View 1 (cartoon, helix red, strand yellow):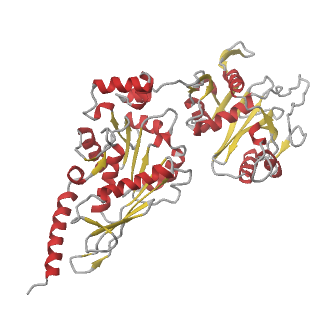
View 2 (cartoon, helix red, strand yellow):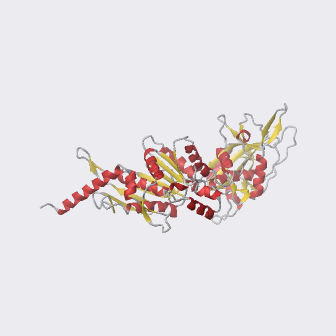
View 3 (cartoon, one colour):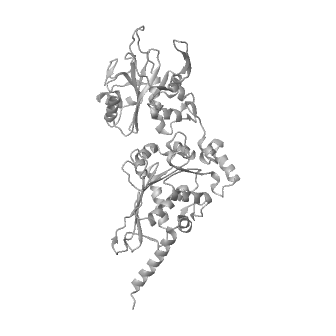
Length: 518
Protein backbone atom coordinates (compact mmCIF):
# COMPACT_ATOMS: atom_id res chain seq x y z
CA UNK A 1 0.00 0.00 0.00
CA UNK A 2 1.52 3.39 -0.99
CA UNK A 3 2.51 5.74 1.80
CA UNK A 4 -0.13 8.57 1.99
CA UNK A 5 2.48 11.13 3.01
CA UNK A 6 4.68 10.19 0.05
CA UNK A 7 1.70 10.64 -2.28
CA UNK A 8 0.88 13.99 -0.62
CA UNK A 9 4.48 15.19 -0.98
CA UNK A 10 4.50 14.16 -4.63
CA UNK A 11 1.26 16.04 -5.34
CA UNK A 12 2.59 19.13 -3.54
CA UNK A 13 5.82 18.98 -5.49
CA UNK A 14 3.90 18.60 -8.74
CA UNK A 15 1.77 21.67 -8.00
CA UNK A 16 4.87 23.59 -6.88
CA UNK A 17 6.74 22.71 -10.08
CA UNK A 18 3.77 23.81 -12.17
CA UNK A 19 3.51 27.16 -10.40
CA UNK A 20 7.24 27.73 -10.50
CA UNK A 21 7.53 26.92 -14.17
CA UNK A 22 4.58 29.12 -15.10
CA UNK A 23 5.43 32.26 -13.18
CA UNK A 24 9.21 32.16 -13.44
CA UNK A 25 8.73 32.78 -17.16
CA UNK A 26 6.64 35.94 -16.71
CA UNK A 27 6.89 38.57 -14.02
CA UNK A 28 3.81 40.25 -15.53
CA UNK A 29 1.70 37.08 -15.17
CA UNK A 30 3.01 36.58 -11.63
CA UNK A 31 2.04 40.14 -10.67
CA UNK A 32 -1.39 40.13 -12.30
CA UNK A 33 -2.37 36.63 -11.15
CA UNK A 34 -0.93 36.46 -7.64
CA UNK A 35 0.01 39.85 -6.19
CA UNK A 36 -2.31 41.82 -3.93
CA UNK A 37 -1.70 45.38 -2.74
CA UNK A 38 -3.46 48.17 -0.84
CA UNK A 39 -5.15 50.48 -3.34
CA UNK A 40 -5.00 53.97 -1.83
CA UNK A 41 -6.83 55.48 -4.79
CA UNK A 42 -9.87 53.55 -3.64
CA UNK A 43 -11.82 55.57 -1.03
CA UNK A 44 -11.87 52.56 1.29
CA UNK A 45 -8.17 51.81 0.82
CA UNK A 46 -9.16 48.22 0.11
CA UNK A 47 -6.99 45.25 -0.80
CA UNK A 48 -6.89 44.75 -4.55
CA UNK A 49 -5.22 42.45 -7.05
CA UNK A 50 -2.91 44.08 -9.59
CA UNK A 51 -4.55 44.69 -12.96
CA UNK A 52 -1.58 46.20 -14.67
CA UNK A 53 -1.97 49.35 -16.74
CA UNK A 54 0.12 49.69 -19.87
CA UNK A 55 2.65 51.97 -18.19
CA UNK A 56 3.06 49.49 -15.33
CA UNK A 57 3.74 46.70 -17.82
CA UNK A 58 6.30 48.94 -19.50
CA UNK A 59 7.96 49.48 -16.12
CA UNK A 60 8.15 45.76 -15.33
CA UNK A 61 9.68 45.07 -18.72
CA UNK A 62 12.20 47.83 -18.10
CA UNK A 63 13.05 46.39 -14.67
CA UNK A 64 13.76 43.08 -16.40
CA UNK A 65 16.01 44.57 -19.08
CA UNK A 66 17.91 47.47 -17.48
CA UNK A 67 20.45 47.45 -14.67
CA UNK A 68 19.63 51.06 -13.76
CA UNK A 69 16.12 52.47 -13.86
CA UNK A 70 14.91 55.85 -12.65
CA UNK A 71 11.15 56.43 -12.43
CA UNK A 72 9.74 59.96 -12.26
CA UNK A 73 6.11 59.83 -11.23
CA UNK A 74 2.91 61.47 -10.21
CA UNK A 75 1.84 60.57 -6.69
CA UNK A 76 -0.20 57.52 -5.67
CA UNK A 77 0.23 55.40 -8.79
CA UNK A 78 1.39 52.21 -7.10
CA UNK A 79 4.90 52.45 -8.54
CA UNK A 80 6.57 51.45 -5.28
CA UNK A 81 4.18 48.50 -4.93
CA UNK A 82 5.10 47.54 -8.50
CA UNK A 83 8.83 47.62 -7.71
CA UNK A 84 8.24 45.56 -4.56
CA UNK A 85 6.29 43.00 -6.60
CA UNK A 86 9.19 42.75 -9.05
CA UNK A 87 11.75 42.34 -6.25
CA UNK A 88 9.58 39.67 -4.57
CA UNK A 89 9.36 37.81 -7.88
CA UNK A 90 13.15 37.85 -8.24
CA UNK A 91 13.64 36.68 -4.67
CA UNK A 92 11.25 33.75 -5.14
CA UNK A 93 12.47 32.45 -8.47
CA UNK A 94 16.18 33.28 -8.25
CA UNK A 95 17.92 31.97 -5.12
CA UNK A 96 20.50 34.11 -3.38
CA UNK A 97 19.02 37.49 -4.34
CA UNK A 98 20.16 40.19 -1.90
CA UNK A 99 18.13 43.42 -2.10
CA UNK A 100 18.64 46.59 -0.10
CA UNK A 101 16.00 49.34 0.09
CA UNK A 102 16.48 52.85 1.46
CA UNK A 103 13.74 55.28 2.44
CA UNK A 104 13.58 58.75 3.97
CA UNK A 105 13.15 57.43 7.53
CA UNK A 106 13.40 54.07 9.24
CA UNK A 107 10.04 54.25 10.98
CA UNK A 108 7.65 54.28 9.25
CA UNK A 109 9.05 54.48 5.68
CA UNK A 110 11.66 51.70 5.67
CA UNK A 111 9.51 49.39 7.78
CA UNK A 112 6.59 49.96 5.40
CA UNK A 113 8.66 48.61 2.49
CA UNK A 114 9.37 45.43 4.44
CA UNK A 115 5.69 45.32 5.32
CA UNK A 116 4.78 45.41 1.64
CA UNK A 117 6.98 42.41 0.87
CA UNK A 118 5.35 40.57 3.78
CA UNK A 119 1.89 41.65 2.56
CA UNK A 120 2.57 40.10 -0.86
CA UNK A 121 4.18 36.90 0.45
CA UNK A 122 1.41 36.31 2.96
CA UNK A 123 -1.18 36.18 0.15
CA UNK A 124 0.67 33.97 -2.31
CA UNK A 125 -0.59 30.41 -2.88
CA UNK A 126 0.35 27.90 -0.21
CA UNK A 127 1.67 25.58 -2.93
CA UNK A 128 4.21 28.22 -4.01
CA UNK A 129 5.57 29.48 -0.70
CA UNK A 130 4.78 29.04 3.00
CA UNK A 131 5.49 31.06 6.10
CA UNK A 132 8.12 29.63 8.44
CA UNK A 133 11.60 28.17 8.07
CA UNK A 134 12.24 24.79 6.44
CA UNK A 135 8.74 23.50 7.17
CA UNK A 136 8.49 21.83 3.79
CA UNK A 137 10.73 20.91 0.91
CA UNK A 138 9.49 23.96 -0.94
CA UNK A 139 9.95 27.70 -0.52
CA UNK A 140 9.47 29.25 2.91
CA UNK A 141 9.79 32.79 4.28
CA UNK A 142 10.24 34.63 7.55
CA UNK A 143 10.48 38.31 8.47
CA UNK A 144 11.49 40.90 11.05
CA UNK A 145 10.69 44.62 11.07
CA UNK A 146 13.60 45.40 8.75
CA UNK A 147 14.28 42.13 6.92
CA UNK A 148 12.54 39.42 4.89
CA UNK A 149 14.25 36.10 4.14
CA UNK A 150 13.09 33.55 1.58
CA UNK A 151 14.55 30.06 2.04
CA UNK A 152 15.07 27.99 -1.11
CA UNK A 153 15.11 24.18 -1.06
CA UNK A 154 18.38 22.52 -1.93
CA UNK A 155 18.66 20.86 -5.34
CA UNK A 156 20.84 18.29 -7.08
CA UNK A 157 22.84 18.59 -10.26
CA UNK A 158 22.79 16.13 -13.15
CA UNK A 159 25.23 13.88 -11.29
CA UNK A 160 23.15 13.83 -8.14
CA UNK A 161 25.46 16.17 -6.24
CA UNK A 162 23.70 18.31 -3.64
CA UNK A 163 23.53 22.04 -4.38
CA UNK A 164 23.02 24.23 -1.33
CA UNK A 165 20.80 27.17 -2.27
CA UNK A 166 21.39 30.52 -0.62
CA UNK A 167 18.37 32.36 0.79
CA UNK A 168 17.07 35.54 -0.82
CA UNK A 169 17.02 38.57 1.45
CA UNK A 170 15.27 41.96 1.39
CA UNK A 171 16.39 44.60 3.91
CA UNK A 172 15.17 48.16 4.34
CA UNK A 173 16.70 51.04 6.29
CA UNK A 174 16.75 54.82 6.55
CA UNK A 175 18.87 56.56 3.91
CA UNK A 176 21.71 57.91 6.04
CA UNK A 177 25.01 59.14 4.60
CA UNK A 178 26.73 55.80 5.30
CA UNK A 179 23.76 53.48 4.70
CA UNK A 180 25.16 51.91 1.52
CA UNK A 181 28.84 52.10 2.44
CA UNK A 182 29.35 48.38 3.08
CA UNK A 183 26.51 47.05 0.95
CA UNK A 184 27.44 44.35 -1.58
CA UNK A 185 24.07 43.03 -2.70
CA UNK A 186 22.35 42.38 -6.02
CA UNK A 187 19.78 45.16 -6.08
CA UNK A 188 19.14 48.57 -4.57
CA UNK A 189 15.77 50.31 -4.30
CA UNK A 190 15.76 54.04 -3.54
CA UNK A 191 12.18 54.97 -2.74
CA UNK A 192 11.10 58.64 -2.86
CA UNK A 193 14.72 59.48 -3.58
CA UNK A 194 14.14 63.23 -3.94
CA UNK A 195 13.10 63.33 -0.28
CA UNK A 196 16.29 61.58 0.86
CA UNK A 197 18.75 64.10 2.23
CA UNK A 198 21.75 61.84 1.63
CA UNK A 199 20.78 60.46 -1.79
CA UNK A 200 23.99 61.77 -3.35
CA UNK A 201 26.19 60.13 -0.68
CA UNK A 202 24.18 56.90 -0.89
CA UNK A 203 24.70 56.71 -4.63
CA UNK A 204 28.42 57.45 -4.33
CA UNK A 205 28.76 54.62 -1.82
CA UNK A 206 26.58 52.15 -3.74
CA UNK A 207 27.86 52.81 -7.26
CA UNK A 208 30.89 50.47 -7.09
CA UNK A 209 28.57 47.56 -6.29
CA UNK A 210 25.97 48.52 -8.89
CA UNK A 211 28.77 49.05 -11.42
CA UNK A 212 29.87 45.41 -11.39
CA UNK A 213 30.02 44.02 -14.95
CA UNK A 214 27.93 40.89 -14.30
CA UNK A 215 25.40 41.87 -11.62
CA UNK A 216 23.83 44.69 -9.70
CA UNK A 217 20.59 46.55 -10.30
CA UNK A 218 19.26 49.85 -8.99
CA UNK A 219 15.69 51.14 -9.13
CA UNK A 220 15.11 54.78 -8.19
CA UNK A 221 11.55 56.06 -7.68
CA UNK A 222 10.34 59.54 -6.76
CA UNK A 223 8.27 62.57 -7.48
CA UNK A 224 10.56 65.47 -8.35
CA UNK A 225 12.12 68.09 -6.10
CA UNK A 226 14.36 70.84 -7.39
CA UNK A 227 18.07 70.74 -6.66
CA UNK A 228 18.26 67.07 -5.69
CA UNK A 229 20.45 64.22 -6.89
CA UNK A 230 17.25 62.61 -8.16
CA UNK A 231 16.43 65.59 -10.37
CA UNK A 232 19.94 65.71 -11.82
CA UNK A 233 19.96 61.99 -12.55
CA UNK A 234 16.41 61.93 -13.94
CA UNK A 235 17.08 64.86 -16.26
CA UNK A 236 20.24 63.20 -17.50
CA UNK A 237 18.40 59.93 -18.10
CA UNK A 238 15.53 61.77 -19.82
CA UNK A 239 18.10 63.27 -22.18
CA UNK A 240 19.35 59.70 -22.82
CA UNK A 241 22.70 60.40 -21.24
CA UNK A 242 24.41 58.11 -18.75
CA UNK A 243 23.48 54.55 -17.78
CA UNK A 244 20.08 55.10 -16.17
CA UNK A 245 16.98 54.24 -18.21
CA UNK A 246 14.15 56.72 -17.72
CA UNK A 247 10.44 56.06 -17.30
CA UNK A 248 7.75 58.61 -16.50
CA UNK A 249 4.34 58.05 -14.90
CA UNK A 250 1.98 60.96 -15.66
CA UNK A 251 -1.05 61.66 -13.49
CA UNK A 252 -3.36 59.94 -15.98
CA UNK A 253 -1.45 56.61 -15.81
CA UNK A 254 -4.38 55.42 -13.68
CA UNK A 255 -7.32 55.25 -16.11
CA UNK A 256 -9.68 56.15 -13.26
CA UNK A 257 -8.18 59.64 -13.21
CA UNK A 258 -10.24 61.72 -15.59
CA UNK A 259 -10.64 65.45 -16.13
CA UNK A 260 -13.01 65.73 -13.18
CA UNK A 261 -10.42 64.09 -10.93
CA UNK A 262 -7.83 66.55 -12.21
CA UNK A 263 -9.99 69.60 -11.56
CA UNK A 264 -11.03 68.39 -8.09
CA UNK A 265 -7.41 67.69 -7.14
CA UNK A 266 -6.30 71.01 -8.58
CA UNK A 267 -8.79 72.82 -6.36
CA UNK A 268 -7.69 70.86 -3.27
CA UNK A 269 -3.99 71.55 -3.87
CA UNK A 270 -4.62 75.24 -4.45
CA UNK A 271 -3.16 75.93 -7.87
CA UNK A 272 -1.35 74.84 -11.00
CA UNK A 273 2.12 75.01 -9.47
CA UNK A 274 1.30 72.55 -6.71
CA UNK A 275 -0.52 70.34 -9.20
CA UNK A 276 2.48 70.21 -11.53
CA UNK A 277 4.69 69.29 -8.60
CA UNK A 278 2.54 66.47 -7.24
CA UNK A 279 0.77 65.33 -10.41
CA UNK A 280 2.73 66.33 -13.54
CA UNK A 281 1.43 65.47 -16.99
CA UNK A 282 4.85 65.55 -18.68
CA UNK A 283 8.49 65.26 -17.57
CA UNK A 284 8.92 68.92 -18.49
CA UNK A 285 6.20 69.89 -16.00
CA UNK A 286 7.88 67.81 -13.32
CA UNK A 287 11.24 69.45 -13.93
CA UNK A 288 9.75 72.95 -13.87
CA UNK A 289 8.35 73.03 -10.36
CA UNK A 290 7.04 76.02 -8.49
CA UNK A 291 9.61 78.48 -7.21
CA UNK A 292 12.75 79.76 -8.85
CA UNK A 293 16.49 79.98 -8.53
CA UNK A 294 17.63 82.03 -5.57
CA UNK A 295 20.77 83.13 -7.43
CA UNK A 296 19.63 83.76 -11.02
CA UNK A 297 22.57 86.15 -11.43
CA UNK A 298 25.11 83.32 -11.46
CA UNK A 299 26.85 82.78 -14.78
CA UNK A 300 29.45 80.17 -15.59
CA UNK A 301 31.33 82.54 -17.88
CA UNK A 302 31.60 85.16 -15.12
CA UNK A 303 31.61 83.40 -11.76
CA UNK A 304 33.95 80.58 -12.78
CA UNK A 305 37.42 81.92 -13.52
CA UNK A 306 40.66 80.15 -14.55
CA UNK A 307 43.06 79.55 -11.69
CA UNK A 308 45.72 82.19 -11.28
CA UNK A 309 49.20 80.77 -11.55
CA UNK A 310 50.84 83.47 -9.47
CA UNK A 311 49.09 84.74 -6.37
CA UNK A 312 50.53 87.78 -4.65
CA UNK A 313 51.77 86.62 -1.21
CA UNK A 314 50.44 89.88 0.28
CA UNK A 315 46.87 89.02 -0.65
CA UNK A 316 44.96 87.86 2.40
CA UNK A 317 43.51 84.37 2.57
CA UNK A 318 40.29 83.59 4.42
CA UNK A 319 38.39 80.48 5.37
CA UNK A 320 34.62 80.23 5.80
CA UNK A 321 32.48 77.34 6.85
CA UNK A 322 29.20 75.81 7.90
CA UNK A 323 29.37 72.85 10.22
CA UNK A 324 27.08 70.14 11.54
CA UNK A 325 27.45 66.42 12.02
CA UNK A 326 25.61 66.02 8.72
CA UNK A 327 28.15 68.13 6.80
CA UNK A 328 31.31 70.21 7.03
CA UNK A 329 31.37 72.73 4.18
CA UNK A 330 34.67 74.62 4.33
CA UNK A 331 36.14 76.98 1.74
CA UNK A 332 39.34 78.93 1.23
CA UNK A 333 39.57 82.13 -0.76
CA UNK A 334 42.06 84.92 -1.30
CA UNK A 335 41.26 88.64 -1.61
CA UNK A 336 43.28 90.86 -3.92
CA UNK A 337 44.19 94.53 -3.41
CA UNK A 338 40.97 95.65 -5.15
CA UNK A 339 38.68 93.74 -2.80
CA UNK A 340 37.86 90.90 -5.21
CA UNK A 341 37.80 87.37 -3.72
CA UNK A 342 38.43 84.04 -5.42
CA UNK A 343 37.42 80.70 -3.87
CA UNK A 344 40.08 78.11 -4.62
CA UNK A 345 39.53 75.10 -2.33
CA UNK A 346 36.62 73.10 -0.88
CA UNK A 347 36.19 70.54 1.89
CA UNK A 348 32.76 68.86 1.78
CA UNK A 349 32.46 65.88 4.13
CA UNK A 350 29.73 64.45 6.34
CA UNK A 351 29.77 62.50 9.60
CA UNK A 352 32.66 64.41 11.22
CA UNK A 353 32.83 65.23 14.92
CA UNK A 354 34.51 68.52 15.80
CA UNK A 355 38.00 67.05 16.13
CA UNK A 356 37.67 65.39 12.73
CA UNK A 357 36.33 68.57 11.15
CA UNK A 358 39.20 70.57 12.66
CA UNK A 359 41.69 68.08 11.24
CA UNK A 360 40.16 68.44 7.76
CA UNK A 361 40.36 72.24 8.00
CA UNK A 362 44.03 72.13 9.02
CA UNK A 363 44.76 69.72 6.18
CA UNK A 364 43.05 72.02 3.67
CA UNK A 365 44.92 75.07 4.90
CA UNK A 366 48.16 73.17 4.30
CA UNK A 367 50.41 75.84 5.80
CA UNK A 368 48.68 78.81 4.13
CA UNK A 369 48.58 81.95 6.23
CA UNK A 370 44.83 82.29 6.89
CA UNK A 371 43.79 85.69 8.24
CA UNK A 372 40.46 84.51 9.64
CA UNK A 373 38.00 81.62 9.47
CA UNK A 374 34.39 82.85 9.43
CA UNK A 375 31.55 80.79 10.84
CA UNK A 376 27.86 81.47 11.61
CA UNK A 377 27.15 82.37 15.21
CA UNK A 378 25.07 79.24 15.94
CA UNK A 379 28.40 77.47 16.51
CA UNK A 380 28.64 79.50 19.71
CA UNK A 381 25.45 78.02 21.18
CA UNK A 382 26.22 76.05 24.33
CA UNK A 383 25.73 72.30 23.94
CA UNK A 384 23.79 70.60 26.73
CA UNK A 385 25.94 67.46 26.53
CA UNK A 386 29.37 69.09 26.92
CA UNK A 387 28.53 72.48 28.44
CA UNK A 388 30.65 74.02 25.68
CA UNK A 389 29.93 75.50 22.30
CA UNK A 390 31.21 73.92 19.10
CA UNK A 391 33.19 77.11 18.56
CA UNK A 392 35.03 76.41 21.82
CA UNK A 393 35.62 72.80 20.80
CA UNK A 394 37.11 73.94 17.49
CA UNK A 395 39.43 76.26 19.42
CA UNK A 396 40.51 73.39 21.67
CA UNK A 397 41.41 71.51 18.48
CA UNK A 398 43.51 74.37 17.15
CA UNK A 399 41.00 76.02 14.79
CA UNK A 400 40.04 79.55 15.87
CA UNK A 401 36.86 80.93 14.39
CA UNK A 402 35.47 84.40 13.78
CA UNK A 403 31.77 84.74 14.59
CA UNK A 404 29.48 86.22 11.94
CA UNK A 405 25.76 86.92 11.93
CA UNK A 406 23.22 84.24 11.09
CA UNK A 407 20.57 86.79 10.01
CA UNK A 408 19.33 85.29 6.80
CA UNK A 409 17.72 88.04 4.76
CA UNK A 410 20.47 90.59 5.38
CA UNK A 411 23.08 87.90 4.84
CA UNK A 412 21.63 86.81 1.50
CA UNK A 413 21.46 90.44 0.39
CA UNK A 414 25.21 90.68 1.03
CA UNK A 415 25.86 87.46 -0.89
CA UNK A 416 23.94 88.81 -3.87
CA UNK A 417 26.03 92.00 -3.75
CA UNK A 418 29.20 89.89 -3.88
CA UNK A 419 27.82 87.91 -6.85
CA UNK A 420 26.52 90.97 -8.71
CA UNK A 421 27.87 91.02 -12.26
CA UNK A 422 29.49 94.29 -13.28
CA UNK A 423 31.89 95.62 -15.88
CA UNK A 424 35.53 96.51 -15.26
CA UNK A 425 38.24 98.02 -17.43
CA UNK A 426 41.86 96.91 -17.26
CA UNK A 427 44.95 99.09 -17.64
CA UNK A 428 44.87 98.75 -21.42
CA UNK A 429 41.24 99.82 -21.74
CA UNK A 430 39.83 96.31 -22.26
CA UNK A 431 36.40 95.78 -20.73
CA UNK A 432 35.15 92.56 -19.17
CA UNK A 433 32.48 91.25 -16.80
CA UNK A 434 33.25 90.04 -13.31
CA UNK A 435 31.92 89.84 -9.74
CA UNK A 436 33.45 90.53 -6.35
CA UNK A 437 33.26 86.83 -5.47
CA UNK A 438 34.12 84.14 -8.01
CA UNK A 439 35.25 80.51 -7.99
CA UNK A 440 38.42 79.13 -9.56
CA UNK A 441 38.09 76.42 -12.18
CA UNK A 442 40.72 73.90 -13.23
CA UNK A 443 42.19 73.35 -16.68
CA UNK A 444 39.25 71.16 -17.67
CA UNK A 445 36.80 73.89 -16.71
CA UNK A 446 35.56 72.15 -13.55
CA UNK A 447 34.91 74.30 -10.45
CA UNK A 448 37.48 73.94 -7.67
CA UNK A 449 34.51 74.04 -5.30
CA UNK A 450 32.07 71.74 -7.16
CA UNK A 451 29.55 71.27 -4.36
CA UNK A 452 29.40 75.01 -3.71
CA UNK A 453 28.77 75.78 -7.40
CA UNK A 454 26.15 73.02 -7.62
CA UNK A 455 24.38 74.21 -4.48
CA UNK A 456 24.38 77.86 -5.53
CA UNK A 457 22.83 76.94 -8.89
CA UNK A 458 20.23 74.60 -7.40
CA UNK A 459 19.03 76.34 -4.24
CA UNK A 460 15.56 77.80 -4.64
CA UNK A 461 13.62 80.78 -3.31
CA UNK A 462 11.73 80.11 -0.09
CA UNK A 463 8.11 79.76 -1.28
CA UNK A 464 6.94 81.80 1.73
CA UNK A 465 9.61 84.51 1.63
CA UNK A 466 11.11 85.82 -1.61
CA UNK A 467 14.02 87.38 0.34
CA UNK A 468 15.14 84.07 1.79
CA UNK A 469 16.54 80.86 0.35
CA UNK A 470 14.67 77.59 0.72
CA UNK A 471 15.89 75.27 3.48
CA UNK A 472 14.95 72.15 1.52
CA UNK A 473 16.59 70.11 0.13
CA UNK A 474 18.73 70.53 3.23
CA UNK A 475 21.84 69.18 1.52
CA UNK A 476 22.00 72.31 -0.62
CA UNK A 477 22.09 74.69 2.35
CA UNK A 478 25.52 73.86 3.81
CA UNK A 479 27.74 75.39 1.13
CA UNK A 480 25.40 78.35 0.67
CA UNK A 481 25.30 79.10 4.41
CA UNK A 482 29.10 78.94 4.54
CA UNK A 483 29.27 81.52 1.74
CA UNK A 484 26.83 83.74 3.63
CA UNK A 485 29.06 83.63 6.70
CA UNK A 486 31.86 85.12 4.59
CA UNK A 487 29.87 87.71 2.70
CA UNK A 488 28.20 89.22 5.79
CA UNK A 489 31.62 90.02 7.24
CA UNK A 490 33.19 93.08 5.69
CA UNK A 491 36.98 93.21 5.39
CA UNK A 492 39.50 95.55 3.85
CA UNK A 493 41.14 94.64 0.54
CA UNK A 494 44.59 93.12 0.72
CA UNK A 495 47.45 95.59 0.97
CA UNK A 496 49.70 96.44 -1.98
CA UNK A 497 52.84 98.48 -2.42
CA UNK A 498 50.88 101.71 -2.73
CA UNK A 499 48.37 100.95 0.04
CA UNK A 500 48.60 101.34 3.78
CA UNK A 501 48.17 97.93 5.33
CA UNK A 502 45.12 97.83 7.58
CA UNK A 503 44.34 95.15 10.10
CA UNK A 504 41.38 92.85 9.62
CA UNK A 505 38.59 93.69 12.00
CA UNK A 506 37.85 90.59 14.06
CA UNK A 507 34.70 89.83 16.00
CA UNK A 508 34.50 87.45 18.99
CA UNK A 509 37.75 85.70 18.19
CA UNK A 510 39.01 83.11 20.64
CA UNK A 511 42.48 84.59 20.37
CA UNK A 512 43.27 88.07 19.03
CA UNK A 513 45.73 87.32 16.24
CA UNK A 514 45.51 88.80 12.78
CA UNK A 515 46.63 85.57 11.15
CA UNK A 516 46.69 81.88 11.91
CA UNK A 517 49.24 79.51 10.47
CA UNK A 518 48.15 75.89 10.12
